[in-house]
Amino acid sequence: MKLIAVDPPTRSFSRWLTDEEIGRVIAHKRSWRLAPDGSVQAGKFRKTRMAASLERLGADAVARGWASRPRVEPSDSSGPTHMMWGIIDARTDAELAEELTAQQHG
Image 1 (spheres, rainbow, N blue to C red):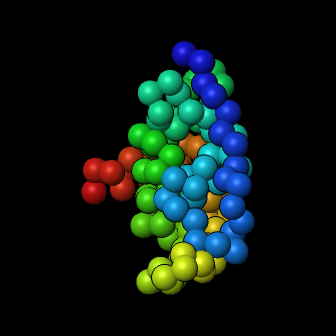
Image 2: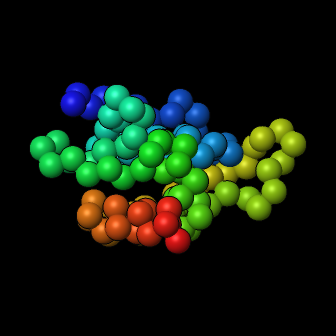
């Protein structure tokens, strides 16, 4: 299976990022890749499925507090998105996969 590199979003963190863009930021920073089915994979040899899609990864990150946005989106879609890199970077891919799997089944 060939995995495709994930590019970062073109919009800045000073804007309200969508769930897909948040997933894209996390996947790019962690060097995760996209599988042909759209799922997010970690690892080059021993591939671990991290999320069903970039959008699902972003939604789970917001739900777990790894990223935060204003509670109500302003009408012009502006508003900062903050990434909690300390939380994400302090965990291994295996730990993140376990937490994300628990989120999907919980």
